[in-house]
Amino acid sequence: MSYTVEYTSKARKDLKKLPLEVAQNIILSINIIKTEPYSYVKKIKGTKKHPLFTHRVGEYRVILDIEDDRLLIIVIEAGHRRTIYKKY
Image (cartoon, rainbow, N blue to C red; front, top):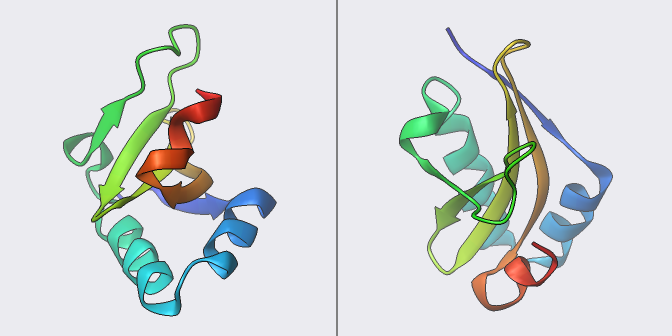
């Protein structure tokens, strides 16, 4: 079973700000993890009630929400690893 991927408006803005090659790599990487997302992500430690996940693409990270009941991956935001975790 393959998950469906949705991008939030914040994630779309973040991808537009990144260099074209990096944004393309992130999109390709997310399309690869659609079949088995838990093999490619790590849980963010501070989020226990509704866990968020991070996916590594080189020096960049993508924050994801995975909804198993609807087979949905929601891309929340993307950015460089030194700045992406400040909110979480």
